[in-house]
Amino acid sequence: MHRVQVLDARGISRALERMAAELVEQVGDEKLLYFVGVQTRGVPLARRLANLVADATGHEPPVGALDISLYRDDVGPWRAAHQQPILRDTELPVAIDKKVICLVDDVLYTGRTVRAALDTLMDYGRPQAIRLAVLIDRGHRELPVAADYVGRVVPTSRAEDVQVHLKESDGEEGVWIAKEVGK
Amino acid sequence: MSVQAAARLRGKDLVGIDPLSAGEIQLLLDTAEQMRDIAARPIKKVPALRGKTVVNLFFEASTRTRFSFEVAEKRLSADSLNFAAAASSVSKGETLIDTALNLEAMQPDFIVLRHQYAGAPHQLARILKSSVINAGDGAHEHPTQALLDALTIRLKRGSLEGLVVAIVGDLQHSRVVRSNILLLSRMGAKVRVAGPPSLIPPGMGEMGCEVYGRMEDAIAGADVVMMLRIQLERQGRMNFPTVREYYDFFALTPERLKLARKDCLVMHPGPMNRGVEIDSRVADGPQSVILEQVTNGVAVRMAVLYLLAGGHGEPTAD
Image (cartoon, rainbow over all chains, first blue to last red; front, side, top):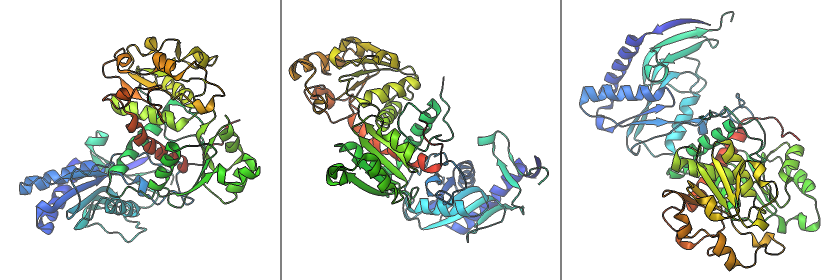
């Protein structure tokens, strides 16, 4: 496995700071903001963005976690994996109705996770709007999905693997593009 | 010893607790715990099993289990078909295998089977391509009941390991007790059983539990007391003199419950015979988790359906 670093800890922080600043500016009323991270690495990123918004505005937005496993489109006869995804917590501490939800994930790739996340959220209520924030956009969309806030656009090939490691979940901090040697 | 959850279930069927590893049981319980949350949502339905068909094939009377499976199927967006033996071709003399093969010709994905003969689900599992789920076979196994009991205990106590669980009542005719002994001992709990000598089958002790003749000895210091129903309909004749005498020696009364730990959980798989194996003051008392068992039953059955839908696992071994 050969890997190249595209962001270090400082790069991640700066990207998140910029995204938080854009969010505050564009959402207008920060009291409507509600961060929801997609399990698993979207959750710590959502928490960091919420903290940055709290620092900038003095208002602490709620943070939730969303598990999308039961809404995936890769089960059934067209299923790729031969096992079901492990279910993780969905925790939405306050109702999402009439809020501006900022959905947070680490990597935007095919767009299928986002589709599943939107369907999951709709079963919990009716937000005023849903925005999408991702740390990395690696291209190769299969569905008409675009992010509103992007940390870094990283052109990749499908053979490559984008690894986002966060100190909360992985003990190290950084983003790498990894490729199987010989591919 | 903390049990690591398996990544998936190996088999295509759930015919009993016996074929499951501790890791598979852990995976089922972890998944069921997440499924519980769906009942608390504004929309109590997820699309995970959209387009899957489940046949509920019940050859024996059942309210709780059949209803619980049906709720679980609906919450996962599967299509349920209900089969009641009395209103079917079984009354015209069709065999179980022919009935099942005919149903399978309509391409269901799951067959949930309740049957009076031990081993009936195992036989169907070998013949059918659909996943077979045992909803109780004779006096053999009732795996989803044992899983929901385990989930109920785990939610209250954090873990099953090291707990003392006393199971009291009709051990002879109970499939619940067999599945529970297998599951609880596999997960590190100590199981004690007690009942009238005429209702203790030979070889019970070899299943990995301690057998007691006196109920008081079995429940002394227990973390959980699980009462079994006296299955009057399964007995040609009663194996004890009178219901009154049974109550005197084997009913869970407030006085007897004092012998167990102060925070001991009281469980019953239902339907209860109040005043026979359990006193109403205990059944409705603060230590009773009997209705939570019912709630957890739906979550456990959702977990079983969800995990079996995931993989074309290996067929059930002979």
